[in-house]
Image 1 (tube, rainbow, N blue to C red):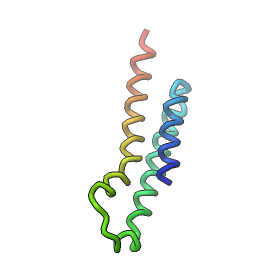
Image 2 (image 1 turned 60 degrees about the vertical axis):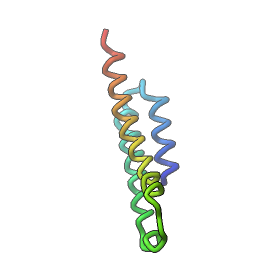
Image 3 (image 1 turned 180 degrees about the vertical axis):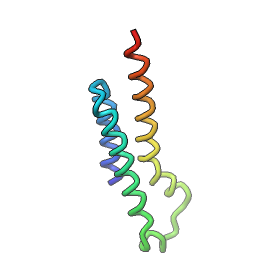
Length: 82
């Protein structure tokens, strides 16, 4: 799921000029990143000793999706000013 989130974020960076994917792909990437993070918090994963770095890495796809959304939105707002 986390890989799918990263792929959707990267895909939105290449298709941001279409405007519609800007509002579809980053939220979808955030959703799949959240599902991957939630799946990581199962009982099996809780029994293992996970470090803070591992927990931060599981949040990374969501952070990248949010950052990509706002950066693309900023770029769209500044690029279409004539």
